[in-house]
Length: 438
Image (cartoon, rainbow, N blue to C red):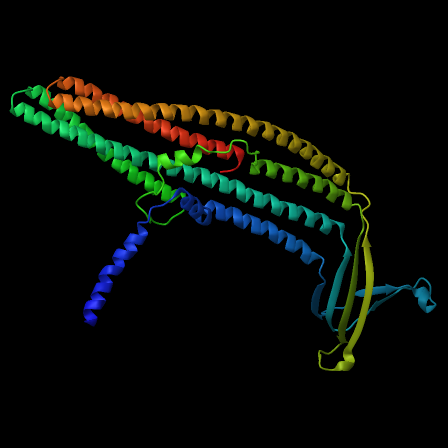
């Protein structure tokens, strides 16, 4: 009994896993998966973390700095100094002397605390704004990722619908070919007519197979675009009709919220901070420092004799005052000001560009919707005509060539409908991208 249960579990588990793996994928799920797994978005996230770490690096500069020094020296020949003879009461007779000991070892601890550094303040402000700039860059990359995934999802839907229609065409042409074989057996049509129907059937088989291959390839491309390692689904839960119904109520009165505009605004702020940072650089840098050291002086090296170690220490306050740098600060300020003016003009141009892009995208939606509605009606009418002519052919009311003409009309109408549907979905996506709401 246990063996039977174990065997049943081994057989059922792969089936359940396979069923779970074959869960249809929705557009929203594809977008969410891409935002979590796309490598280019992860790169942008790392760039943001790098920028945020710059803020922490600047903060580290204002913390106390503590260092230790160890200097061991063996004087193979002491430095000679010349003392004026006047010191010894014999002017004009200088005396060369050597000061020092053979061994000179120094150990010390240095402490430095910045009290005020204007450069640190400017660097911190720039780093903070740069981190904000990179976070907006993440949004921009996310928008690009969404666009690529959405286009790929729409393309997969298109090939899915093409495969569905080509399968229906294959069934139609197969039924007509079978009818033609019966009519040929009865002597109602010639072998020439039969061969024409056979060619139509073979073309339908070839077209359907190409669509099946293209649909599989488009699904692989979709999973590549969302950053999946392998295909976990072989179908999509959305369809053209459902997306069309969802988008019919699209809000076209939304304000433009493009990340590119935010990035340019922050870029201008960075240039303004650059000017302010140069102004800060005219202010003195003030720091406090201290040192405590032990120095070993002796002609014999025996560092364990405490009487040969001589401590000394000091502390102080240092102010570094910039006086003249060859006008470098002023020229750097001028550069930032010019870049700031350029950034403001670019911001205004982007606003105008995106407003015009949104208007164009909205017009494209209206045109695509009108074309889609018309093609949908034409498709229903062409399908009905083909059905009627098929019945008339079987009853001998029309010639085979008449049905062939209707068949090609149906195929063209199907193509027009699918192209119109795809154009509509792409137009909606372009509008949402233009408005920054994709």
